[in-house]
Amino acid sequence: MATRPADVSGSEQWDLTPRPPSASSVQLVRQMELPDANLLGNVHGGEVMKLVDSTGGLAAMKHCGGPVVTVALDEMSFMEPVYVGDVVTVKAMVNDTGRTSVEVGVRVEADNFVTGRHVHTSSAYLVYVALDKEGKPRPVPPVEPENEEQRQRQREAKLRREARLARKETILQARRAKGE
Ligand SMILES: CC(C)(COP(=O)(O)OP(=O)(O)OC[C@H]1O[C@@H](n2cnc3c(N)ncnc32)[C@H](O)[C@@H]1OP(=O)(O)O)[C@@H](O)C(=O)NCCC(=O)NCCS
Image (cartoon, rainbow, N blue to C red; front, side, top):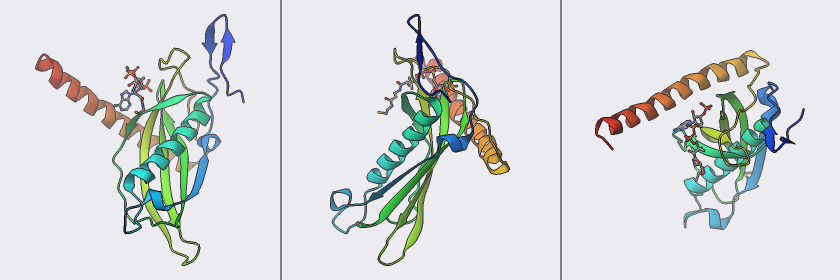
Protein backbone atom coordinates (compact mmCIF):
# COMPACT_ATOMS: atom_id res chain seq x y z
CA MET A 1 0.00 0.00 0.00
CA ALA A 2 1.58 3.24 -1.15
CA THR A 3 0.82 6.12 1.18
CA ARG A 4 3.09 8.88 -0.09
CA PRO A 5 2.43 11.16 -3.02
CA ALA A 6 4.73 10.57 -5.98
CA ASP A 7 5.88 13.61 -7.92
CA VAL A 8 5.05 13.18 -11.61
CA SER A 9 6.33 16.05 -13.78
CA GLY A 10 5.67 18.54 -11.05
CA SER A 11 2.13 17.29 -10.38
CA GLU A 12 1.08 14.99 -7.58
CA GLN A 13 -0.35 11.53 -8.10
CA TRP A 14 -2.21 9.95 -5.22
CA ASP A 15 -2.82 6.29 -4.48
CA LEU A 16 -6.63 6.09 -4.59
CA THR A 17 -6.88 2.33 -3.98
CA PRO A 18 -9.91 1.69 -1.72
CA ARG A 19 -8.92 0.72 1.80
CA PRO A 20 -10.75 -0.67 4.84
CA PRO A 21 -11.58 1.53 7.86
CA SER A 22 -9.35 -0.70 10.00
CA ALA A 23 -6.29 0.44 8.00
CA SER A 24 -6.79 3.96 9.39
CA SER A 25 -7.28 2.87 13.01
CA VAL A 26 -5.17 4.77 15.54
CA GLN A 27 -5.11 4.88 19.34
CA LEU A 28 -3.59 7.50 21.60
CA VAL A 29 -3.04 6.92 25.32
CA ARG A 30 -2.12 9.72 27.72
CA GLN A 31 -2.22 10.23 31.49
CA MET A 32 -3.88 13.54 32.34
CA GLU A 33 -1.78 16.00 34.36
CA LEU A 34 -2.32 19.05 36.60
CA PRO A 35 -2.04 21.65 33.79
CA ASP A 36 -4.89 19.82 31.96
CA ALA A 37 -7.36 20.47 34.80
CA ASN A 38 -9.19 23.06 36.89
CA LEU A 39 -8.69 23.56 40.63
CA LEU A 40 -11.01 20.63 41.45
CA GLY A 41 -8.95 18.25 39.32
CA ASN A 42 -11.52 17.96 36.52
CA VAL A 43 -9.84 17.89 33.13
CA HIS A 44 -10.96 20.76 30.85
CA GLY A 45 -13.26 19.79 27.99
CA GLY A 46 -10.95 21.65 25.62
CA GLU A 47 -8.03 19.36 26.54
CA VAL A 48 -10.12 16.33 25.66
CA MET A 49 -11.23 18.01 22.42
CA LYS A 50 -7.61 18.65 21.50
CA LEU A 51 -6.77 14.96 21.97
CA VAL A 52 -9.85 14.06 19.89
CA ASP A 53 -8.81 16.38 17.04
CA SER A 54 -5.17 15.18 17.13
CA THR A 55 -6.12 11.50 17.10
CA GLY A 56 -8.84 11.98 14.46
CA GLY A 57 -6.35 13.88 12.31
CA LEU A 58 -3.86 11.02 12.53
CA ALA A 59 -6.50 8.50 11.41
CA ALA A 60 -7.45 10.78 8.49
CA MET A 61 -3.79 11.23 7.55
CA LYS A 62 -3.20 7.48 7.72
CA HIS A 63 -6.15 6.86 5.38
CA CYS A 64 -5.25 9.64 2.94
CA GLY A 65 -1.47 9.19 3.02
CA GLY A 66 -0.79 12.91 3.38
CA PRO A 67 -1.60 16.10 5.23
CA VAL A 68 -5.17 16.92 6.26
CA VAL A 69 -6.95 19.82 7.98
CA THR A 70 -10.01 19.74 10.21
CA VAL A 71 -13.02 21.28 8.46
CA ALA A 72 -15.83 20.29 10.85
CA LEU A 73 -16.46 18.85 14.30
CA ASP A 74 -19.98 17.66 15.07
CA GLU A 75 -21.37 18.35 18.53
CA MET A 76 -19.48 16.76 21.41
CA SER A 77 -20.90 15.79 24.80
CA PHE A 78 -18.96 14.97 27.95
CA MET A 79 -20.92 12.18 29.59
CA GLU A 80 -18.49 11.44 32.45
CA PRO A 81 -15.81 13.59 34.09
CA VAL A 82 -12.11 12.94 33.50
CA TYR A 83 -9.78 13.61 36.45
CA VAL A 84 -6.09 14.33 36.88
CA GLY A 85 -4.29 10.98 36.97
CA ASP A 86 -6.82 9.27 34.69
CA VAL A 87 -5.38 7.47 31.70
CA VAL A 88 -7.29 8.64 28.64
CA THR A 89 -7.53 6.39 25.59
CA VAL A 90 -8.66 7.98 22.33
CA LYS A 91 -9.55 5.66 19.44
CA ALA A 92 -10.18 6.90 15.91
CA MET A 93 -11.05 5.37 12.55
CA VAL A 94 -12.29 6.64 9.18
CA ASN A 95 -16.02 5.89 8.67
CA ASP A 96 -16.54 7.19 5.16
CA THR A 97 -15.15 9.47 2.49
CA GLY A 98 -16.39 12.10 0.08
CA ARG A 99 -14.29 13.25 -2.87
CA THR A 100 -11.72 15.23 -0.87
CA SER A 101 -12.91 14.74 2.71
CA VAL A 102 -13.12 11.92 5.24
CA GLU A 103 -15.35 11.49 8.28
CA VAL A 104 -13.56 10.07 11.32
CA GLY A 105 -15.30 8.58 14.35
CA VAL A 106 -13.51 9.13 17.67
CA ARG A 107 -14.21 7.49 21.04
CA VAL A 108 -12.75 8.64 24.36
CA GLU A 109 -12.44 6.40 27.42
CA ALA A 110 -10.83 7.10 30.79
CA ASP A 111 -9.31 4.62 33.24
CA ASN A 112 -8.05 5.06 36.76
CA PHE A 113 -5.52 2.29 37.31
CA VAL A 114 -5.71 2.70 41.13
CA THR A 115 -9.50 2.61 41.64
CA GLY A 116 -10.36 0.59 38.54
CA ARG A 117 -12.87 3.25 37.37
CA HIS A 118 -13.45 2.91 33.63
CA VAL A 119 -15.76 5.30 31.76
CA HIS A 120 -16.74 6.13 28.19
CA THR A 121 -16.58 9.89 28.36
CA SER A 122 -17.19 11.14 24.80
CA SER A 123 -17.68 10.23 21.17
CA ALA A 124 -17.39 12.61 18.26
CA TYR A 125 -17.40 12.78 14.47
CA LEU A 126 -14.95 15.02 12.68
CA VAL A 127 -14.41 15.84 9.02
CA TYR A 128 -10.93 16.36 7.58
CA VAL A 129 -9.95 17.53 4.12
CA ALA A 130 -6.82 16.19 2.41
CA LEU A 131 -4.60 18.87 0.92
CA ASP A 132 -2.13 18.84 -1.97
CA LYS A 133 1.20 20.68 -2.04
CA GLU A 134 -0.54 23.94 -2.89
CA GLY A 135 -2.83 23.56 0.12
CA LYS A 136 -5.85 22.81 -2.10
CA PRO A 137 -8.33 19.93 -1.45
CA ARG A 138 -7.27 16.77 -3.31
CA PRO A 139 -8.97 13.37 -3.93
CA VAL A 140 -8.92 10.75 -1.17
CA PRO A 141 -9.09 6.95 -1.47
CA PRO A 142 -12.59 5.51 -0.87
CA VAL A 143 -13.38 3.41 2.17
CA GLU A 144 -14.19 -0.27 1.63
CA PRO A 145 -15.95 -1.68 4.71
CA GLU A 146 -15.05 -5.25 5.66
CA ASN A 147 -17.97 -6.17 7.92
CA GLU A 148 -21.55 -5.19 8.82
CA GLU A 149 -20.49 -2.90 11.68
CA GLN A 150 -18.26 -0.90 9.33
CA ARG A 151 -21.00 -0.84 6.67
CA GLN A 152 -23.41 0.59 9.23
CA ARG A 153 -20.86 3.27 10.24
CA GLN A 154 -20.46 4.16 6.57
CA ARG A 155 -24.24 4.42 6.02
CA GLU A 156 -24.65 6.66 9.08
CA ALA A 157 -21.64 8.78 8.06
CA LYS A 158 -23.35 9.45 4.71
CA LEU A 159 -26.48 10.67 6.55
CA ARG A 160 -24.39 13.02 8.72
CA ARG A 161 -22.54 14.27 5.62
CA GLU A 162 -25.85 15.11 3.90
CA ALA A 163 -27.04 16.95 7.02
CA ARG A 164 -23.78 18.94 7.37
CA LEU A 165 -23.68 20.01 3.74
CA ALA A 166 -27.42 20.83 3.67
CA ARG A 167 -26.98 23.03 6.77
CA LYS A 168 -24.02 24.81 5.18
CA GLU A 169 -25.97 25.34 1.93
CA THR A 170 -29.03 26.68 3.81
CA ILE A 171 -26.87 29.28 5.55
CA LEU A 172 -25.14 30.28 2.30
CA GLN A 173 -28.51 30.60 0.53
CA ALA A 174 -29.84 32.82 3.34
CA ARG A 175 -26.74 35.04 3.08
CA ARG A 176 -27.07 35.25 -0.72
CA ALA A 177 -30.75 36.16 -0.35
CA LYS A 178 -29.73 39.05 1.92
CA GLY A 179 -27.01 40.04 -0.55
CA GLU A 180 -24.19 39.37 1.92
C1 LIG B 1 -10.76 22.83 4.38
C2 LIG B 1 -10.77 23.91 3.31
C3 LIG B 1 -9.46 23.84 2.50
C4 LIG B 1 -11.96 23.58 2.37
O1 LIG B 1 -12.05 24.63 1.47
P1 LIG B 1 -13.36 24.80 0.57
O2 LIG B 1 -13.20 26.02 -0.24
O3 LIG B 1 -14.60 24.66 1.42
O4 LIG B 1 -13.21 23.58 -0.37
P2 LIG B 1 -14.34 22.72 -1.02
O5 LIG B 1 -15.62 23.47 -1.18
O6 LIG B 1 -13.70 22.11 -2.25
O7 LIG B 1 -14.61 21.58 0.06
C5 LIG B 1 -13.61 20.65 0.34
C6 LIG B 1 -14.24 19.52 1.12
O8 LIG B 1 -14.65 20.01 2.38
C7 LIG B 1 -15.99 19.65 2.61
N1 LIG B 1 -16.59 20.67 3.46
C8 LIG B 1 -16.55 22.00 3.25
N2 LIG B 1 -17.22 22.62 4.25
C9 LIG B 1 -17.68 21.65 5.07
C10 LIG B 1 -18.43 21.66 6.27
N3 LIG B 1 -18.86 22.79 6.84
N4 LIG B 1 -18.73 20.47 6.85
C11 LIG B 1 -18.31 19.32 6.31
N5 LIG B 1 -17.57 19.25 5.17
C12 LIG B 1 -17.28 20.41 4.57
C13 LIG B 1 -16.62 19.59 1.24
O9 LIG B 1 -17.79 18.78 1.22
C14 LIG B 1 -15.49 18.95 0.46
O10 LIG B 1 -15.46 17.56 0.68
P3 LIG B 1 -15.85 16.51 -0.51
O11 LIG B 1 -14.94 16.80 -1.65
O12 LIG B 1 -15.58 15.19 0.11
O13 LIG B 1 -17.30 16.77 -0.82
C15 LIG B 1 -10.94 25.33 3.89
O14 LIG B 1 -12.26 25.45 4.41
C16 LIG B 1 -9.94 25.61 4.98
O15 LIG B 1 -8.77 25.83 4.72
N6 LIG B 1 -10.41 25.61 6.23
C17 LIG B 1 -9.52 25.79 7.39
C18 LIG B 1 -8.97 24.45 7.83
C19 LIG B 1 -8.13 24.58 9.07
O16 LIG B 1 -7.23 25.40 9.13
N7 LIG B 1 -8.44 23.75 10.05
C20 LIG B 1 -7.79 23.81 11.32
C21 LIG B 1 -8.67 24.48 12.31
S1 LIG B 1 -8.02 25.99 12.89
